[in-house]
Image (tube, rainbow, N blue to C red):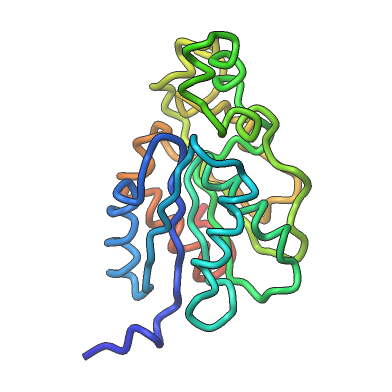
Amino acid sequence: MTDTNSKPKVVLVHGLWFGSWAMAHLARHLGQAGFSARKFSYSTTHHDLDLQVEKLFQFAVRDDGNLPHFIAHSMGGLVTLQMLQAHPGVRSGRVVLMGSPLRGSSVARQLSRWPAGRRLLGAAENTLIEGIRGWPEGREIGMVAGTLSMGLGVFAGGARLKSDGTVLAEESHHPALNDLVEIRTSHTGMLFSSAAAQQAVAFLGKGRFDH
């Protein structure tokens, strides 16, 4: 029997309007690659960012007091980065972001112009519009960005710009990233993409993607 305590641990953090179920494909892929994955579940629209940050921290450190690796999709990346900033002295593993709007989301800005859109965004509105607050120092962080423009961004005026259909390429870039790789998949599609999963495993293992 394999000792799961000896496997590198990864916490998976889902994005807006999704639940932990959305990370099941990644969890299976990580298990096959020798990692022990746990899926974090939180309300993306009913509680503010600070509460989600503390819940994520408590979930992540419950085994041994250290922070494991993370793979975070979309808004989950913003929650993860804020958590790392809030706990700078805690040892942690590497972080893979997938389609996270680090510079804020133009789709969220468009939705916030209408009452129905603001209700859909709920407590996530300000977080998604503003993007990240600062940057966690001393962490190895990589970004998987999609280039297949199929999603809400098409209806929000971004059809002519490079994007994953929801997040523009420029919104996912940040000069402090250790590495960035682009794959042909949409914002939601990357959750079920074997190529995206393989790149995530590569970064967790060596701190860089397979270019």
